[in-house]
Image (cartoon, rainbow, N blue to C red):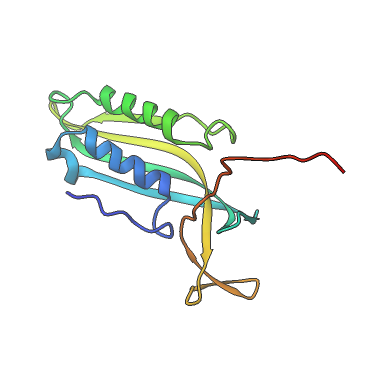
Length: 163
């Protein structure tokens, strides 16, 4: 199974990239057994202009990653668990700031060789929009589309205190 990136409207970016990462960890014969989805979302209306784009607000959701008939005798579920933990610590910039819950893992044996693995993870991330002439999102008299925007960071800074 190849992983097709989905738009922000279909799936959170963090869930999308974590799903792609898990596919690099588990055996190829398990790729078609993996599913991921958002289970509910709470929207926080906290717009913030960022220069080249806007954080329209924050989206908090429960991510569910499921691998059915996982061959636990051939590949340890603990490797998936450790990989998820490491990925979250390296790639989720909002986890500590928003004090999100730790992930929950369920491993339910299905047979003497397979188990159903479910990972539940709380995420929060910005809903980002960029102004575009043909945008489908109408906000404050302008048109926007869902998109990540470029962030410019100053390389030099001069402060002149003379007056």
